[in-house]
Amino acid sequence: MATDESTATLKEMRDGYAEVVDPKSGVSGGVQDVYGEDTATEDQPVTPWSVSVASGYSLLRDPHHNKGLAFSEKERNSHYLRGLLPPTVISQELQVKKMLHNIRQYQVPLQKYMAMMDLQERNQKLFYKLLIDNVEELLPIVYTPTVGEACQKYGSIYSRPQGVFISLKDKGKVLEVLRNWPEKNIQVIVVTDGERILGLGDLGCHGMGIPVGKLSLYTALGGIRPSACLPVTIDVGTNNEKLLDDEFYIGLRQKRAIGQEYAELLHEFMTAVKQNYGERILIQFEDFANHNAFDLLEKYGTTHLVFNDDIQGTASVVLAGLISAMKFLGGSLADQRFLFLGAGEAGTGIAELIALEISKQTNMPLEETRKKIWLVDSKGLIVSSRLESLQHFKKPWAHEHEPVKELVDAVNAIKPTILIGTSGQGRTFTKEVVEAMASLNEKPIIFSLSNPTSQSECTAEEAYTWSQGRAIFASGSPFDPFEYGDNVFVPGQANNAYIFPGLGLGLIMSGAIRVHDDMLLAAAEALAGQVTQENFDKGLLYPPFKNIRKISAHIAAEVAAKAYELGLATRLPPPKDLVKYAESCMYSPAYRTYR
Image (tube, rainbow, N blue to C red; front, side, top):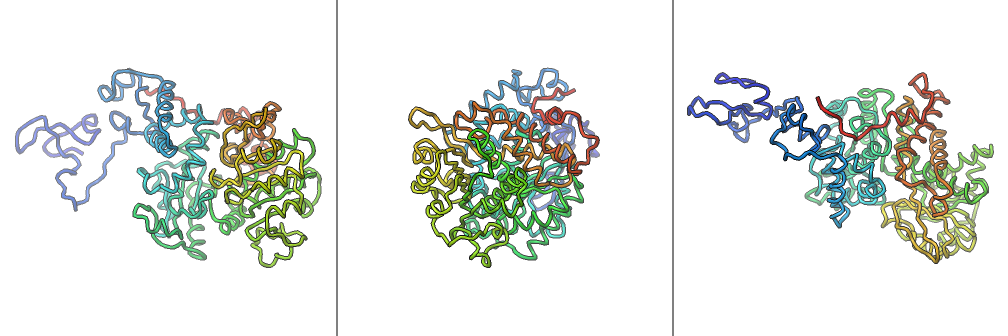
């Protein structure tokens, strides 16, 4: 690193320059261009040197270790920070208070999202401390519904890389690309191809906001270390013409690859992940279009530790809400009749898990329990006369019945006790539909699950008003409490964030090598077990989010117990107290003292 004219110590050079006497001018006190950046012409390459010692200015720029004004006097002296910070020393608690105050000043949710992402890139521990301590307020900012708008505008707001982008250009080099990521001990990957982002459709490479958001929740809610999380977007193009014409679009400007070209890239990715990170790496598929989502889960479910949150996570959280409702209303799931609007990943995934749970409770064959569940897609009620034209994942739900086109007619024909919306189509639970449910049931159970809020099948206010305050309501996106008559109803949010962080923690801490449906049932039952009568009296089918880490620990314990029971766990012997062990595994965002 030294030149012929002078030598420089590590301390002098840690920011890339050393004080020297210029041999040509004889003047001291200037800076020498140690790395040759200033003397190189623009077309000459330079080496992007970096000193690995985390001290001085580089320490303040390192989000993993930066503490801002919380560095102590001793740390400022020993890490060359004196003069680089104002003289005051403040606590992490005061930093949280200040950041929350600043974020609340923004009126636009996307601005709050950008402020949170900026904090994550500056001070990781403060970001997670802020999120964990204020999870009910900030969860809708870092995830749905705000993350949907962030994805739509991702090209405009993109500033720093937050994950790995694998495109068709990287075919044959995917392992090499994964090895470029600085963290080596990865335990969870969330991957998307951006084709079906929430209810917003094909957002291509801009879908990266989803894996980033999901993994921040794995850490905040499930306690997985941030350094063990890797967001991945697989860019095979987009069919969204608006994005292809957008000068700020950051992805491949081509139509989506399909068929063999798509399958080969995905297979190379799955193989490279296992080769690089081992058998126990959890891969969560996120927001893939229906046809790919089911195929990928079926193809890799027997060879990798894979999980699809849209199919399995949604199913588990909805099942938990239904188990809660049965617990407090009386009756059992086997006594209910279910009608779904939407027969994609979420709808069929929920339906299958409900059928499995009823089968487990009653010992009825799965083929019989499925007959209690009816689905409506864009062409109407799924019935056996449509069997030949149905996609494979819809076929188990084609029952004997005359064709019915409209949802309200299907409600009157099937007479469901439970209505579930997973259509991605806003305002499809009309006044007529809700009134029909209310006329058939004393306490109609209505789940309006599509995200974001604009795509919700109905609002909380509509469900309560049109049912004269009798509906048991839950939604995918959050709604404010609603006053009807003398009652204030707090809508339940069937948010996947209740399930996947605890599920992930349970899989990791047991060293599971596969995901089994019984683990999803165990997670749902564990979540339902956390709901109290006091919660239900307020209209809540789910426990308050402020207790989410405790809830996640209980879910993780049940999932791990099931992994050990099924012989799928590799971390042996199993801990004696799985709940305590889960809590002890959780990442803490408290600042550490530096030597």
